[in-house]
Amino acid sequence: MRPRLTCSLVAVALLSLQSVLSVQAQTPKKSAVQAACTRPDALFKVGEAATFKVESEIDGEATYRLSEDGFKTVKEGKLTLGKGRPAEVSGTLEKPGFLQLRVTLGKDEALAAAAFEPIRIAPTAKMPADFDSFWDAQKKELAKIPHDAKLEHSPKYSDAKVDCFKVSLANVDGKRVHGWISVPKGKGPFPAILTVPYAGVYGIEPDKRHAQMGALAMNIIVHDLPVDEKPEFYEKQASGPLQDYRNIGMNDRQKSYFRQAVLACLRAADYLASRPDFNGKDLAVTGGSQGGGLAIITAGGDSRVTLLAASVPALCDHAGIAHDRISGWPQWLRRVKGDEAAKVLETSAYFDAVNFARKYKGKSLLSVGFIDTACPPTSVYSAFNVLPEPKMIVAAPRLGHATDPRYGPARDEFWKKNLPLKPPE
Image (tube, rainbow, N blue to C red; front, side, top):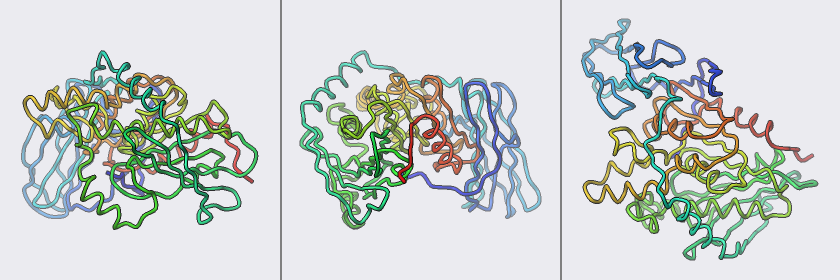
């Protein structure tokens, strides 16, 4: 689940309240049917009517569905569409949330959405009474294991300004954390930026860009696999032992695959904080999609993290489906029923980015797509709304599961404003 990078851009609107930055980004147009909210920022007060304009390059009768962020149906109907003959659909919500429009004409489909006071969306995730004691025990278990850092200098990636090292660290259950560390040449110590991974099974290259900005930069994968094998190696793992790894142990917090994944991220953060070339105070974490959720979890799980940047974060508000509302990826509750669902619901709370967001004390920058069906905006705002101030969200009304083109520059500015960066000469 890697977020796409989209290129076209429409407009920018700034909401002064709650430090919310709203940016419109257009997803690629591949369908003969297009839909968009008639209000450019797609922001409404609860009870207001939102209107969507639907256009088609082909003639025909289309069906439409208005829903609560793709989950509960609000209204359904039909539209007669044709080239040069747009149609309109209107609807509203009587509570904070997202009204999603899905229009289908044959094999063509369009999505649009309107946000109704999204900064008032309350999470469904509940904090387990033993949340802290469970994670304290996991971190104590991890702390008993020496870092056992193994570094290998990479002439291939190093240059006149940055030294790159392949790195692996010891993790729980006999596993290891694999990644890269990129060190600016010149006099330290440096602030540190940890990048955690989007979903999937793949290799990575070093994060030289953040090192070129003047940060001690580390990026990791959460699987106990080398970072630089050929693609077919990862394909074999993805179709074999790591197939659907997201579901491994989803009904048992001790056996959940995300237990070791979270601890891998915390191990990497701890290793960065222990290095003599770290400045001892400025530790940032970032990621997108699964990595966005893991970034929030790492920020809330390690009190030394001072800055958080998460793009279209997954792992948010798992309990939503149990409350007749959409959940974030991986939407575990969609695939279980009965007693099994109760166990999965209980387990999910320990791996919910919302509960870690409640623990975080630093500054944040997030991004969200209003028509994201992998990490739905309702789930993203469930986490964003419990983060402490100051915080900002790059919100794109016409973006799906993708990286907003404004997010990268916004993150760069976020780092520059809050980290003592000095690019290597």
